[in-house]
Amino acid sequence: MQIQSHKVNNIQIAEILSEEIIIRNAEDGLDLLGNVYYQGFDRMIVYSKNITPDFFDLKNGIAGEILQKFSNYRVRLAIVGDFSSYTSKSITDFIFESNKGKHVNFLSSPEEALERLSIH
Image 1 (spheres, rainbow, N blue to C red):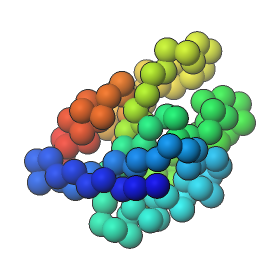
Image 2 (image 1 turned 45 degrees about the vertical axis):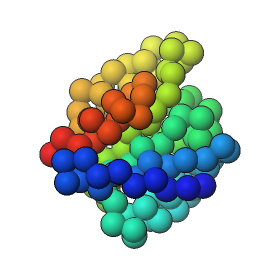
Image 3 (image 1 turned 90 degrees about the vertical axis):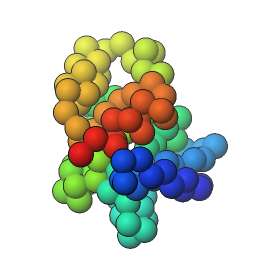
Image 4 (image 1 turned 180 degrees about the horizontal axis):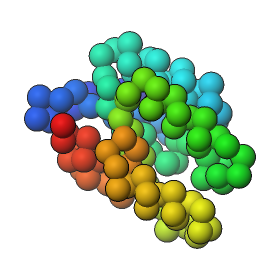
């Protein structure tokens, strides 16, 4: 795993780069959050390919557990990927509602994520 730092509008944003799944459960999410937060970032980009597919099945509660940690630490998160394969009403509604706010966004490109996270 590599953390690439971006500075946009004087805001530091961490982009997490990896070829493997790095968030398998809430503990992995908290470890990543702590690592990035400790390095001075309060905004992060993570790719959907690096998150367990179970995250997108809202019934098991993994997404809620992980996103609650980000909320508690006030770290804004952009999850980048193609979410068109997730067709259940619950996940599409969840993504839609999340994207209305600033705290957790599901976006299609890192450029879009950097733009969204660089707004105060």
